[in-house]
Amino acid sequence: MNERLQLILACIRVGRANVLTTHDIAKITNLSVRGVREGIAELRLNYSVPIVASRSLPRGYYFAENDDEYTAWVLQYKKQIKTEQKLLNSLRTTSWDSYKKLKEQDNVSV
Image 1: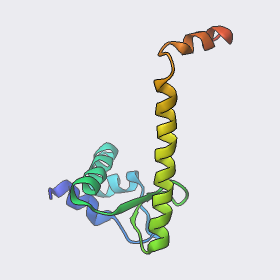
Image 2: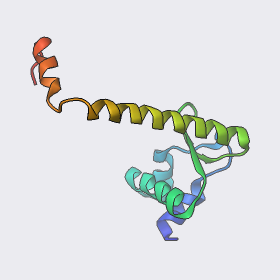
Image 3: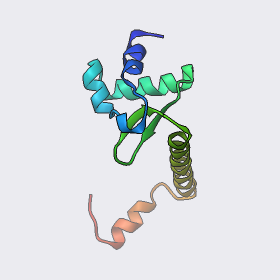
């Protein structure tokens, strides 16, 4: 594991009450926000590190302290996947220039 990933991993705390945002981790590690996000994805995918995240307050990354915290994250993630799948399905069945008709109807210019 490289130094960047080790720095990120060292920041992650146990329990939802101890979350750190991407910006917090970036400040602590002196990495970019993008670098932190990519690092967390790499830790999850390549090293199977069970970093979970909360999108509701308090927002941020953490290690689940118990089954309830982990289950809440899984449910939140499944909901996100379902929403993204709906979006993809909708856009796949839509003409790429259909927005032009909507703009014309509302007299909206770009």
